[in-house]
Length: 358
Image (cartoon, rainbow, N blue to C red; front, side, top):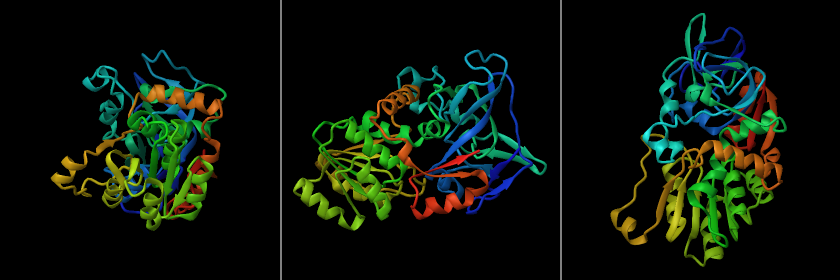
């Protein structure tokens, strides 16, 4: 089958090959025919080595498709079922799951070091234990979540990561208060989803911050009340909050420099929500006095900070009701053969979300 493979960490180009085979099918596993997958910035981070990932590997973790085959012991799925790929499934039995923090379950990472694919030349891994830049993938049955027939594959793919992450950061992690002031630093697909979540919660002011003009324009269409470049953020803070700082600031870049800016832009007693996935050696510096004296809450938000399956259901309900715009997030739709052009578009910031149609 065809799949896009990164041979070595640090390479910028993927090679679309036709000699890749999905492996690992057996009891408790399912084989999925991938129909659509979103291109997420985390895929770029893994390719660059910012996020840990063994190579060679097939990127992609934001996919949707159809069940081709189910292994022994899988009773809730059957061939032909439409599913979204969940890269962080909950086991339901670990301490985190029992506490209701299913987004912290580590069961999904147990297979991350096991190859998902093979080629004549050797094993190939899948990003985050999945790898959806391919025609077929084999995953644990818990990674395949059924979706209603009226949800298109491209929309379902976005729900698999970016939309769930951004909406959940505002709805679950921050629980934005109505009438509050919000700033969102980084307005790609996840940042735009955080903006939509803040709007849903009734935020009075939502300032979108991004260096790319097209993304700032898009942010206004999705609910931001104003959009500024990073250089204009200080003025926006003065104009919107009289210099006090925002009630909530979402950092959706994954870098210590923007996290520090986000902290400084948050008012005393306000909430900083860290949504971006950064590198292990990129350290954020805060002094002990400011941590004590400013009493700002720092809330990391992993995969939307809530029960993933409930978040999927909520997002579909909001989409059906016209309360969130998911179709507008997809600014490019391209075949797998054009994956490298799509990567360049994401690096340049000219796309919110690119859907790879497979």
